[in-house]
Image (cartoon, rainbow, N blue to C red; front, side, top):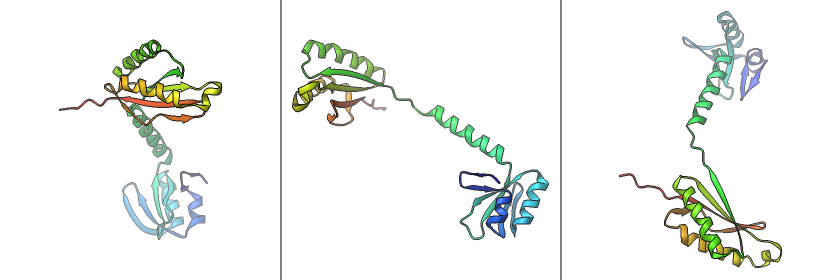
Length: 176
């Protein structure tokens, strides 16, 4: 007996129900006893898989279950290849950063945005700075004013622990 992904196989079908709607590789066989369905599957050298146990009567399919699982894994890998991988670059600031340093770091952020990468700006609040996070929000607002022509803000800056975070994404290019 094998049980995987809500699919009941072979002898477990006999325990689960008396008769099933059987589907074979060449077409539907109709409603037959589960013993007969299991015998047909063994004669063909295939597995009897209960694919819809909640149906009345339950639906069983005669198939090569190993081949089916292999094809499912292959489809998953193919779909994963086609997914776009998002790179997030992180740039850190402090709440008492000099304007020249902000300019330098924003220059690098603009290079990342041109390459299509997401940029996460973080202001680290040290010690007593956590009691006045407004200085950190001011730094991120100054940074946003410098990059808003090149990027879209994913969300407003927000305080998370000792950090104030803001994620920006490259501007979408209009396709005409």
